[in-house]
Image (cartoon, rainbow, N blue to C red):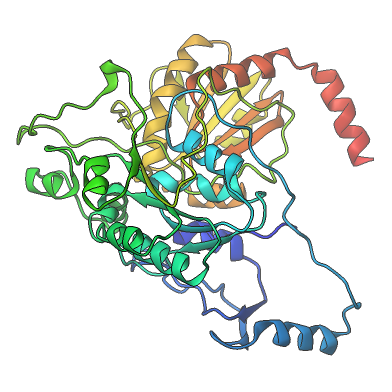
Length: 441
């Protein structure tokens, strides 16, 4: 199997590690969750699993692995499974978390170093770059907000001649923005991409997961960093960055620069996901299309900054609409095994990407009354989610006549979801069943 990163969320990492009997640590420590979540494990090692330390942090892991291979009699020159060398197509359509991630995956140069503090907006990027040319990835192993820009600076100092890409969320950038001045002063080759959604979305999610509420006015103010809006291009130029730019947005989508009214509601979560599971999911349906507009390569200069203002999604309601149904462990099997097309959206109330996808799912359901559109609350139905192998949400499943046709994590745009339904409607199910029978023979 291809190597996988452990999920950020404790329950997803637990699902990945479930069933392990032995866990071997190579220059790392035993996996734990970021925070102490109510009713969720902090120690992610499965019960009954033995942890073995092959090499501690800072030790010679290559020599330790070679010695282990000799000890177990591994064939000389044998190689394990490698990640397939694939890149996403250069994206088209609106600029959002998904298309940004696909642009990075399509253009990341060989030997690049990525300092990743994209947080909620950057959560598609790991999946989109998994098959890119060899590169190094520096991500946050603890909870220290603001680490990305200093780490990018240090990487550029330590690895002269290599391209350094810093994916930086807007709130985190404000902690250590002065790193740009150092990069300019030292002539470092760093491209910084500011993922600007004007909120501490990662903190909103964590507050919800630990059972706290940000519904009060003062709590909302603490997590909203708009009004006045931050002009990251101007800030970067003030640090001496000569190449700083922001893509133009349609006039109707530009945020107001007026100070925010104290009563203004906080912005909603922006499009992102907890892990892009693009690789490894088999599907009888084709890839979705992404729209007409293409974005080019970031400027190939030494120190540069691009600020990407990601537009807010419209609010959603937690209750399903008249055209969608809630599924439970008791009703799931009967529903998906029924004749016809069944689409299942697996979600949770704390999940920002789920909130972004919900109105799209409901709108498309209203246009297809002959299909069944259903939702599974993974928090309320944890046993069902575990039995389905769900490691990331939102996850969309498409069934027809009891056959699973599509199973993929991530929020689809409306056009892509419509295309998916159309493909399911157009399938020759006799041919699908014949192919399945041949594969199982």
